[in-house]
Amino acid sequence: MISILVVDDHALIRKGLKMLLEDNPDFQIQGEAETGLQAVSMMREQHFDMVLLDMSLPDRHGMDVLKQLKAENPDVKIIVLSMYPEDQYGVRALKAGAVGYINKQSAPEQLVNAIQQVISGKKFISTALAEQLLSNLIGDSQELLHQSLSNREYQTLCLMASGKSLTEISEIMMLSPKTVSVYRARMLEKMGFKNNAEAVHYAIAHNLVDANK
Image 1: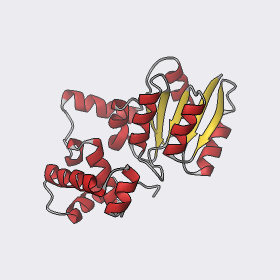
Image 2: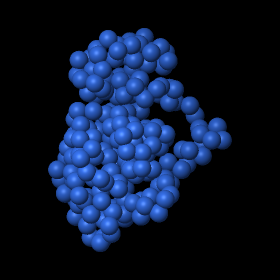
Image 3: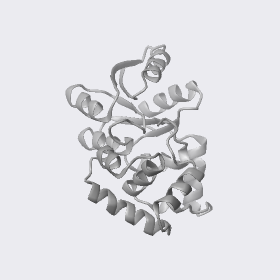
Image 4: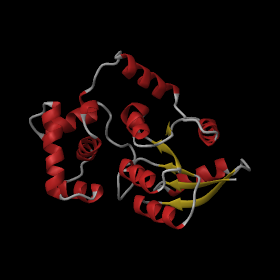
């Protein structure tokens, strides 16, 4: 029996995942978390074989939650299940320790297949993500400005584009406003933008704004 923790702030999605996965006798949803902090707390109190992690959470960014869960539980298998398409966070999630990345718009069968593949000791990579990895490997993809950003700088850009204030961003990222300002300045410099408006326009044009929020 594979014990699974579902981390998503939408009750309907958690319920849907539970109904889908518990049709399989090998899967059991043994925990549900609405926030990143709740997920970390539950992992400290109970053993889970796998975590299905949403990238967009109300209190902390999914990348930060992913890194902390892996740091505290190196053996746990984490599949990111997100509204963000693969080209936005897929590679970043894999580098941070995830063993799979699935767009929420994918067919339900793909999630079941991903879990089975991951439990067998493999990573799950969708066709879209595989193409991106291959393109990056052979240098065949066009380098986008945001691909040069660190995870923190990228998070700052996405949160800015979603309309968050500096104070709100600092609370979500659990950093001081001064530190966030440093990441914002680095992001603008790397991307060659003169101000926040140019960065926000770029993020919107490249669909970097979270559809959930």
